[in-house]
Length: 524
Ligand code: NOJ
Image (cartoon, rainbow, N blue to C red; front, side, top):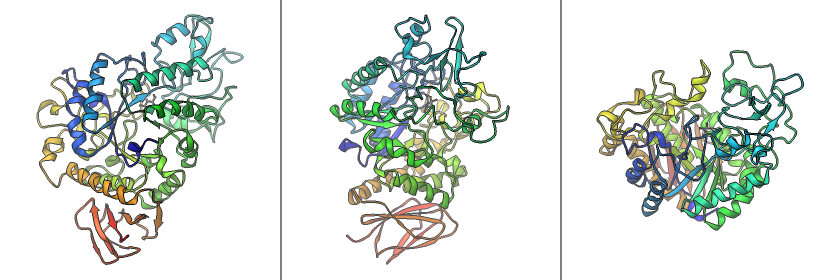
């Protein structure tokens, strides 16, 4: 793992909603370039930009039609070069999103593949005859609803897509697919990017026999949501297959030559299954169980213990993501949800590994209710299903129409978050704002990382409502209960930082208010 990655703090730029430079209502690279100063001031080290490639946008960019260019709605290759150069000048690293599990159905590879059985790219995708008697070749389901197979009339076969029919899965058993991606990695690394966030990193390899996934219990009800249908199966044949890590070992050789990082979107909710990815294949994997808990000390404590045991320094800890409700919403919403989200960030940032904020987390935003303006294909295509638009609402930069995000009509409404006091500009001027508290937390975290370097996590017994651990000479404690907790420290220490007012250390006791995290420095 490159040195620069160790102890870094990450930040997700959801490009469509970050900053619009040309007034068309869609965030873009020029807009991002103008706002890089905000990220440097915030104290993050690494910026991950979601896909900006040419794309029909069936899944907002995760349907790539050309891996080696920029979609005109986001800018040009030169704009990307400028973002990378300016970010580097500010001391920021830039990671881009690599989408290797599937392409767009408009990618020239797929257009060729579907042209005939003998096309040069036919086997770059997964084609199968209908099952005996007709119907899809197996029982796999798409994450986004319906079967994972679509019938192609022209050639009389089905093709596989774990997501939308517009996102056909590549066949990673094919050596030419592997070689093509080696070239894609080299292309971007030569342009100066510092690494890749790898989309659907757990699913590239499929069972060669394409066997059915067993049901875990009853068959899903006819009106079940795509998420419920997906959860009804034991996905033993369509994800987390044995050979998948070999791909990342191969990419690791390329990445190492460029001092670049590989960060996997390994969406497995059993932490033990993450180890295989971070042991010697990926530099880091997002730890998604961290995005799934409510504000419950026992639940979070057990989850974190299991994730740390799976390899803490290989984890990236997402506070929020563009696919899930924001932390502030998961923890109750409003001012209380924001305060808890900050405390949770403090907890995650105290661990080894890399904490990741989603844009807007630094403003304490919860999921803006977008009042039925559905854009996410999950919601558009599955009546009754909850989509992902809530965590994708545009950034609030400054008061005024368009909130400094756009001079045009935003592609997605600001939702219930639209308020001057939530903007970055207003918060920057208030020392007690969420934004300034996040800045101070990230400053303190740098100090923690410096003194705790390499130290293992030792969990401390601190009562039911408090999660506490020690790393070298630092104690991290988070209080999820009511009132003020009194936490017995292993030794007398000094308060380094707290996410809320009212924390204090007297001798070997930490007094910690509700919904807050503190860092305490012990002697040594
Ligand atoms: C994970 C991405 O984060 C999500 O937004 C996308 O829909 C799926 N992968 C499919 O690419």
